[in-house]
Amino acid sequence: MFFYDMESHGELALYEYLYRCIRHDIAHGKVEPGQKLPSKRTLAKQLGVSLITIEAAYDQLVAEGYIRSRERCGYYACDLAPAAKIEEPRSARHRAETETSANRRREDHASNPNGPQPISQNEERLERRAEYRPSDADFTPPLNSLAPHAQNTPSDAPLLADFTHSTLATTMLPYSAWAKAVRRTLSDESAASLAEAASAAGSPELRSAIADHLRQYRGMDVSPDQVVIGAGSQTLYQLLVQLLGRTRRYAVENPGYPLLTRMYEQQDAQVAHIGLDDSGIDIDALEASDASVAHIMPSHQFPTGIVTTAARRRELLNWAREGDRYLIEDDYDSEFRMAGRPIPSLFGIDAAERVLYLNSFAKSLGAAFRMAYLVLPPQLAQRFRKQLGFYANTVSPLDQLALAHFIEQGHYDRHVNRLRTHARKTQDALVNALHEAFGDRIAFTGLNDGLHFIMQLESERGERELAAAAEAAGIRIAPLSSFAGMASPSGAPTGTGPQASTASETSPARFVLRSDSTSIEEAPAVANALANAWA
Image 1: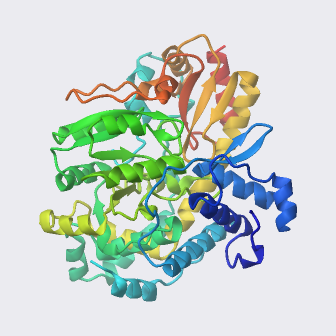
Image 2 (image 1 turned 60 degrees about the vertical axis):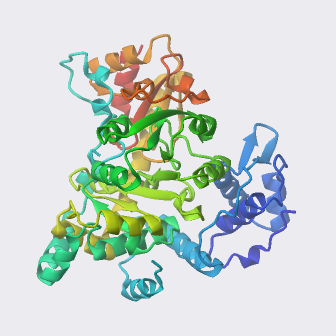
Image 3 (image 1 turned 135 degrees about the vertical axis):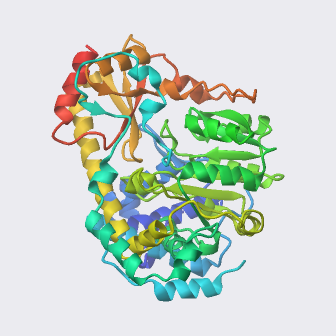
């Protein structure tokens, strides 16, 4: 057991090859639940690799919930829910090629902060088409709009920091490259291309570019015909309800994204609020809710930052297979995971075609670019064309084609790389400054998992009182409790899970912070001001 031929790693990094080998053995029962893994030093010596390789592989397995760490005891395999074969419904060879390509591009990004050079994808796209078988714009909007109590205290203090919002994506956008993409669109595209972009699903060029991006960075085998473009996530919510049906009950996470409830209820759909535990959405509460659609954020839940474990993912896929049920996978900031591999998407391991994938460009390009996209399973893509194909697309054809060029030329990849690197640096500077200012009173969870994390403070004061004091000192910050306890006007049940207490007013106080809301230079002053406000 745990003897792997490390010479067979091919183009994969050693740590990723080892991670995949151990993941495969756990998923297929070769490593039994609860079985202890070799210590990092033992396995490194046994396989003839560095300790860093073992640490990276184990860290990724822990992040995805395949193994758990016990302090001073070691690592143990987790108990995965029994399930039918869960893997991409494509050939093993094609999956391997896809994963290798995704890993190679990810490694290029890690080694080159400016990203890869532009490459031509025309031949790949034509081949895949031949093989095809038939926040506002942001899922994490400005938190101040969701936590009104944070603004209730009038203050003449200048705003030093707003941890509920960031304009970094807009500020760092390479406008010269975007202008070139727009000019190219105006000069090169035909009237026919502009007309195609106005169709219900959107521009074929942009849908192809998105499919390529998902294949390279998320390992998702997606046809352009499965992609639907919309003017922000809210537009896609409406299309989802029309496509799946208004008579269903839609489950949303609690604590979660409050506008989600309002959007579904405005479409006359019933909503059930389901609590969370440390593994993700509470599966027992979901079963009891009578919901047939669950809208979840498995890779980085907002606002708690929970990453859904491998075992819970299997349970969710099993739940979706029973009856006419669907999972809506909101992957709102997966491109901004700052350490390790991206968490695999549910869509990519769904063999029963019950997962719909939803993402937005608001995090990467800024809220001014009101573009989001939906990836449908093949049968729902066909239903979309039949039932909703009469709609005109809600995004400007010019913007769609310009974004397609922007992605194809590699500008988007490089931009996201720069944003990710900058967010990591500002996060590290802020965390270090806060540790310096607060000492042992403060702790953090969810660092490096995405564009927000949780700050915990030991205090006798409640979260709302602390938020008001911070606002008076010129620092806008949102309590975690402001996202919980949502009551549905429609009378739908509210799930209660172990995570419910996490979003309460009890100590320690917890706050949601954006990683990119302040600069490296401003971090010490902001941390000291916050410490003085909470003294």
